[in-house]
Structure formats: C-alpha cells, structure tokens
Image (cartoon, rainbow, N blue to C red; front, side, top):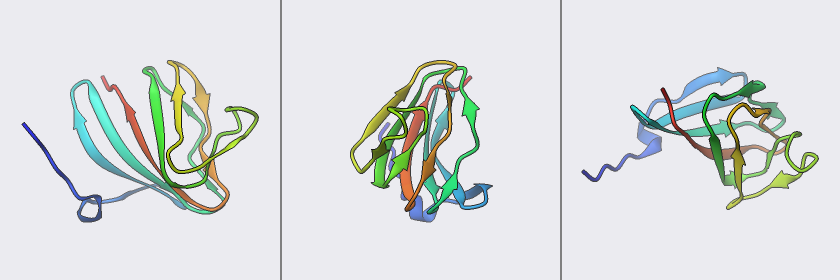
Amino acid sequence: MIEAVNASELPWETVTEGVEKCMLRSLPGEKRTLIRIGAGKAFPVHAHAVPDEVFVVDGVYVDPQVENGKAFGPGAYVYYPVGTEHHATSPSGCTILVWNANR
C-alpha cells in the first residue's frame, strides 16, 4: 500500500533544547524519523542496537566521530554500524532523515 505524509502536518517532539523529531513511519522492523537540530545544538550522545543511517536534507550535519568532525551538507549520507556511539551536531542548523530497524 502506498503511503504519503506531510511532515509539516505531523507533530514534532522535543528531544532536547534545540532538537526536535518527527516520526514519519514506525512499524515493526522499520522506523523513519526527521530530526531538526538547531544552530549550535546537539542530539545527545547515543548508540544503537541496530544500524543507523542518516541522510542530510538541509543545513550542515557534523558528528565528531565521523571523519574527524567533517561537515556534511545536503545530500550527504552517513552509515553507523550496530553499536556505534555517535553525537549529531550542527553549527548552523540542519534537518536529517534517519532510518533504522526497530525491535
């Protein structure tokens, strides 16, 4: 079945100051989330029991663990293997699409 959603019509939940998330899809075995990180803000350090994949929609995404803190712009893709601890930040603000399996 084809599904379509408009993130501007969905609720956004505060993760921490300056960081919000919007669940696009959450079914057994799959999860898709938009995350907005405000300028100078950070998503808390965390690790996953499943692979985590990040696609930069807009802005600048930085993780100090990836390529010595390289800045990634729109269109960049970052793959985090199982158990990887990471720390998403943004000097100027960004929106990322995160997808992973859930249990």
